[in-house]
Amino acid sequence: MAEYDVDLFVIGAGSGGVRAARVAGNYGASVMVAEESRIGGTCVIRGCVPKKLLVYASRFREDFEDAAGYGWTVPPASFDWPTLIAHKDKEIARLSAAYRAAVEGAGGTIVEERAVIEGPHSVRLPKSGRTVRARHILVAVGAAPVLEPDIPGRQHAMSSDDVFDLGIFPKRLLVVGGGYIAVEFASLFARLGAEVTHVARSGNILRGFDEDLREGLRDALRQAGIQFSFKLLPTRIEKTAGGLSVTLSDERAMTFDRVLIATGRRPNTAGLGLEQVGVEMDVDGAIKVNAYSRTSVNSIHAVGDVTNRVNLTPVAIREAHAFADTVFGGKMIAVDHVNVPSAVFATPEIGTVGLSEERARESRTVVDIYKTTFRPMKATLSGRNERTMMKLVVDGTTDKILGVHILGHDAAEIAQAVAIAVKMGATKADFDATMALHPTAGEELVTMQKRTARYERAVVGEGAIPAPVSS
Ligand code: NDP
Image 1 (cartoon, rainbow, N blue to C red):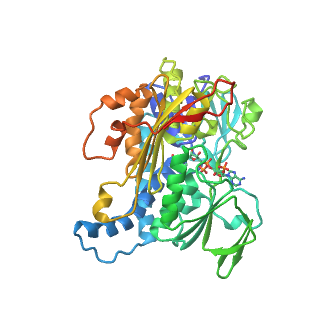
Image 2 (image 1 turned 90 degrees about the horizontal axis):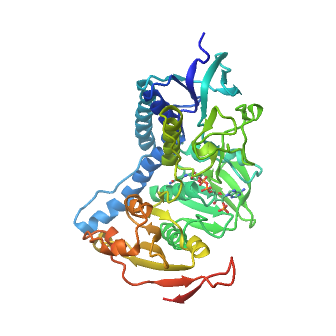
Image 3 (image 1 turned 90 degrees about the vertical axis):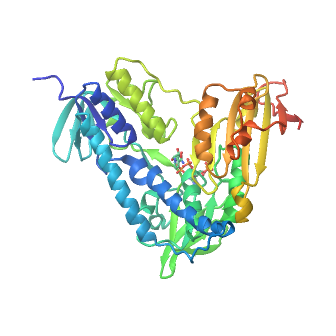
């Protein structure tokens, strides 16, 4: 009898798990993948993909309005939420099937049930009562929404997971939280026609992002009708005949059709058997791994959100690919988590890569800022009152581009392309030497001549706050 039933047992068929299964399978490994929910994971089933489809839907309202300035007469448009959800479901089912095909095409087997780790080389499938002996185990179970604070009536609120299955469009929506998810859903529901109230415990949305992005997006979303209240949280939710009655920490009571709580996500490690086999985790339950995604147990690896490194789909995919290359392909590959671009798919959109101005000023001796805000060309004939913002954060000593921050149309697309230059270590001089492509918004990145500000760190010890010395 063989020592092991499979070379690799993957727990979780999301973006990370499926990539690892496919690459390992292509290296000739025998692979089994367990998934207790739908094949595809957070990104495909209840995250990036369906969210982006809803974002596209939310942008048509402005397109219909703007068309008039370009000579079009558009009949009054109406929107039907159930139609959107039905079409979205069809596309998600197609993608889920493609994920299944990716595993099976590489010779892998999928078991649709929960798996629990029993030993360094042993996985139990409680539903079917089987135990599988695996040479290697990969944990790729992702993370799940955390609904905070724990207030009376919290069970009446929903997480982002629930939004995608709502049968009825919520006309009055309360969004709680200031991160990616809260901002993206507040934006898309407001633009689909909901009255959106947005509350967060901090003084602004998107803590950690460049301040100009945070302020610019908040102001644009306010202009789109979102009612923001900061340093405020709900203290009670009650179900009434008129909807969900929410008491806020300033004693106000308001009624909504739905309450969306988006206050972060926590690794899905509970009940997986990890403690019993000695896999180390941090206080949040995230699995600790080395640069090759190996846990404290040699035969067990982990990738993606369950490790709480950079919680983005392409990062999980890259970690999974590197894991399979390292363990089955004979190439030691570690993932570089520096200068990962990211986007916030609000409208307007954020695209960003590298250090914010604030982080750069904390860590560099001299920081130069180049910033421009302008009216996008499309807004000239549409008459829409909107601005695009672009900002370069430059190391004043080496001339290296430390960060690029964009708020406006196609910001994510521009950020993806410019991230290559930032990753290669491009300097401001390299940007200046690049020919503009006219007329585009992106050309502003290579035509910013005038420095907006320079900050020099006073050499009086760590932690000194740099002051502007010229502008
Ligand atoms: P984030 O970590 O981005 O934001 C969490 C928000 O919840 C913060 O505003 C935080 O406030 C607030 N918060 C945390 N705890 C509490 C509490 N106890 N009471 C009140 N407020 C609280 O989480 P998200 O849920 O928005 O997103 C999860 C992850 O999903 C992200 O980190 C991201 O990696 C990923 N994601 C990426 C997207 C993209 O790339 N476009 C889109 C969606 C998700 P404070 O600021 O004060 O800490």
